[in-house]
Structures are given as C-alpha cells and as structure tokens.
Amino acid sequence: MSGARGAVEIVEPTQAERAHARRVAESRATIPDLELGVEVAMDTAITLAAERRVSRAAVLVRACALALRDSPRANAAYRDGRFELYSRINVGVVLSAQATPTVFDAEGKSLEQLDAELQTLAVRAERAELTPPELSGATFTLSDLGALGIDRPAIMITGAQAAAVAAGSVRELPVVREGAIVAGQIMQLTLAADSRILFGAAAASFVTRIKQLLELGTL
Image 1 (cartoon, helix red, strand yellow):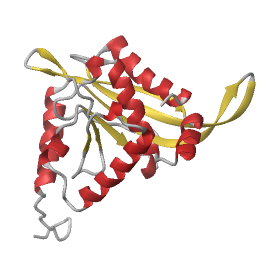
Image 2 (spheres, helix red, strand yellow):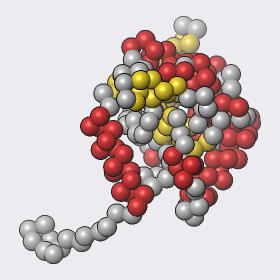
Image 3 (cartoon, one colour):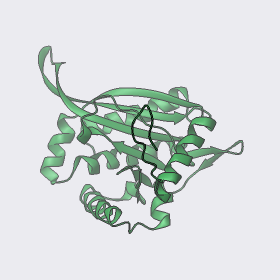
C-alpha cells in the first residue's frame, strides 16, 4: 500500500501483543484509576544492592512485596462488586510488552533469591519459555523504567489487580540533610490504583510504605 504517507507495511501482532492490547484497552475502559507519585531517596537502597550484590529490580520487588504484606487491599482486586483479597503475594515484573513474568510468594524470598529468579525469568522470557501461570498469576505489577532513562514514569493497571507501581531513573539532586545541602540520589515512584478498592489514605499509605522500606533499607 502507498499514499501520502509513503509505503505502508501491514504487520500482524503476535499473540502476546494482542493479549497486551486487549488488557490495556479493558483496563482503560473499566478501571477508575487513581495515580499518586512520591520521590524516594535511594542512597541507602543503592548501597544495600551493592553490598548484597543484587540488582535494583530485586530491591524494588522486595520493597513492594513487603509493603503488599502490610496493605491487604493493595494485594487484591475489585471484581463483580466485591473485593477479592489474595493470600499469595505474586509480583509481576514488566520485562517488555510481550512478557511480564510473575515472582510467586515474593515476600518470603531474600534479595539474593529474588535476584537469581529475576535473571532466570528474563532468560526464559527471551526464549519464550514462560508458562501460562507465570504470565497470568500476578496479584500486583512492578515496572522498572529506570534503565530507559524515564524520570517520571507512568503505569496502567491490568488484569485482576488493585495496584501497580512504576519506578523511574535515579537522579542526583540537591537535598537538605541535617541543615546542609548535599547531593542525593532521588527516584520517582508512581502508583496506579483501582480507586474502587484502594483509594485515598489507603493508597497513600501503601506507596509511602514502599518509600519508607527503600529509604531505611529494611529489606
């Protein structure tokens, strides 16, 4: 085909891309989402990751999982006029539009275990070896966009979930500590929440808990 826009190539989406398009369309049409953002001082978390020799993604997954344990309505969904509270904390980690593998029972795994599992899932995702439960079992979603240089990330809720979080890049910014202006490592964290189940103070408390865990390094 050709015209004013030049030659047009028609490309059929893959099955995974079709599923992703369907999920985000359904999400935008049916979920009244609430978005909150906080700035996180990442100095302690960065030091912790270096000392434990784990990735930033492992640190983020651990912080989210522990916060979910403290916030049952964030590890849940609004379906058919009722609240579904999940007993397992399964964190879906966005690797691409085609793959968001699930880390099952994430709150019970150490940083080292999470790091190893994330590496394995990334390799298996590239080989298209992920199983249906691994692609659909998440109760919450994390998107780490820092590697892409995104400072102020956004995210959508997909599937039967109450919340999703996106992490941006770490920037060196001036901060005040003990009355002095010093350089700080700051990251933007964005929460998207289904306001039918996770709203107001509950949503704020959840994202603030993630911030607290990262800043204190109690992981």
